[in-house]
Amino acid sequence: MGERPLVGHYMSGLPLPPECDSNVWIQSEIRFKPRPRGFHVVTDEVVEAAPRLRELEVGLATILIQHTSASLTLNENASPDVRRDFESWFDRAVPEDAPYWTHTLEGADDMPAHIKASLTGPSLILPVRAGRLALGTWQGIYLCEHRDSGGPRTAILTAFGEPAQ
Amino acid sequence: MGERPLVGHYMSGLPLPPECDSNVWIQSEIRFKPRPRGFHVVTDEVVEAAPRLRELEVGLATILIQHTSASLTLNENASPDVRRDFESWFDRAVPEDAPYWTHTLEGADDMPAHIKASLTGPSLILPVRAGRLALGTWQGIYLCEHRDSGGPRTAILTAFGEPAQ
Amino acid sequence: MGERPLVGHYMSGLPLPPECDSNVWIQSEIRFKPRPRGFHVVTDEVVEAAPRLRELEVGLATILIQHTSASLTLNENASPDVRRDFESWFDRAVPEDAPYWTHTLEGADDMPAHIKASLTGPSLILPVRAGRLALGTWQGIYLCEHRDSGGPRTAILTAFGEPAQ
Image 1: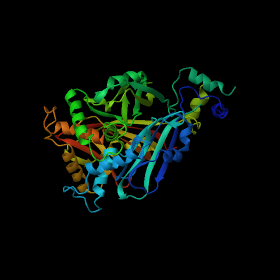
Image 2: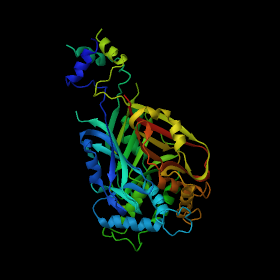
Image 3: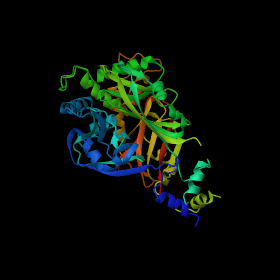
Image 4: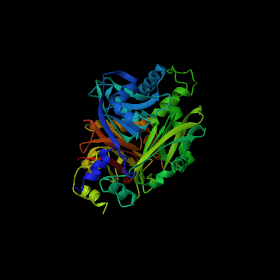
């Protein structure tokens, strides 16, 4: 009989006691379709893969790509020139024909892909505010595909935060 | 009448039931004043922008800079030589006069700035312990300004954690 | 007398009300033994340093290395060739004998170590799912030691999440 008042309280929709929060966890897999080598804006795909982000008044969203030859970064979302120049720079900075590569079994594009992946990084952490990713106006999420034929790529989106009251 | 005991419990200041946490969320905008191209230690500015970090016994603080030609990193907080050498290296690694740039409309420093921003990264995630950022002794937060005249820069600080009991 | 039902409720092991979460915080120091300059897979050491990650049904784990000449990244966990090629590339991309270094007091390997540390980054944020780090099959945690004799390295692991019910 002792539990009744508590259960009744929560079921009645009355506000929670102030010290007791109510964080929401969201975790889902994002499958990116195969893409050619290069830098690709995927912001919309990420947002569509996590519709429950809209519930969060304040929170954080993280994305980890589960591969070692593709990566994630934020950069300019408007001009395709920027993405092309990214590829030009990375291809020159980490050349395929360098004489010092020893890990060459999986193709000439493999070892440079590993280096490029660590230079840009495997994950993002993004603030959530009023149900939206709080990115800058010009910021977009780049999927960086460093292999010639990397195939589909999987990422784990994990978000949590406080829902609107 | 059923709710009374619960409300009375919390209002009385008695400890929360052990399974019920009480995370605090902090989210605020940090405005960095315009700075010349280069690497700048801004740890104090970040800490001053978030005085409520002091409330957290354990937690995490994240910062996202909302731009694509400035970035954030952690590095040596003592010697100005280190920051100058950062600039020397980045300017040579990502040269302004490379023949392969196609995105040149916004000035010679623009496209290199985008690359440098993704090499260092747009965000930091830092542990909070006993009300302070748990950085190493020599670690400082660098605001990396990659444009000649980047203007003011905005970042979103999002932190959460458990307050001291 | 009013508090009795609430306390009785929680002590009885009945489920929490649905809006009231029960996040667990984990924070601990990881001490990495001294390692030679190079890239080292330390996934097992990280997991062993945080046995309580197993309690989390969903969550996030972050690691910050508290140094400015060593860093963390994720990359291929199988072939030692990959780690060797990482070292080859980084040593050429950030050469010790560059004429523009001014911060040379602490040895020829010091300033390149600072740059390499910021290129790979000081921290990781990793999803936790069903008590395990949700890494890709080929992903391992690299401790990147950029000094010739960097000594022991300290990192702060901070994780939080929801325990299995």
